[in-house]
Image (tube, rainbow, N blue to C red):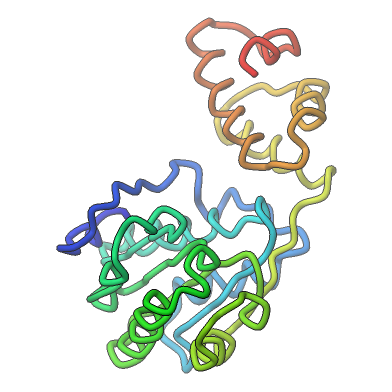
Length: 236
């Protein structure tokens, strides 16, 4: 949760957006159409469809885009909600009550509550309330609505009635480009051989790659060291 949306009275989750989740550092690659749609959905005036559904494997960029969208609306002074449902299991489905009062609601990890009737009922009700209030819903899950294992057919229909986009994970060359882009934005000198070493160790998990880059940035600054492979090894 971030910014004005944290006023929700029942929300006890302490969720903070990652500092590096922004539209301008998302490498779209094969996801260009989905990326453009998310940006338009977030920034343009409301259209006939107020729900956008993203799906794809871990590391494809779903969380990045949801957090970036929420950050964008927050920067405009509007209420926004980012809620990772994978972390919400300890709470009651009433967590979704009144979220439609925000301008944008970003629900991540929908697959974490798929098949749970109480959560699905609450989500269906939120979609209906958001439709009436004009709020926008940006939802992400590991699979498309047809293959999510939902117990409620009507919820599956609602989720599939808006825009639905699959996000594809970056290939190795695209990951190398994304890593270099992140490093440059931080003013960090990342030699090609070091970038390739990082990817050789963490190529399947972009979350781990970017988390390591965060640690390298801080450690290199503190130690006043250049980035080398031995230096990286010491932080893994």
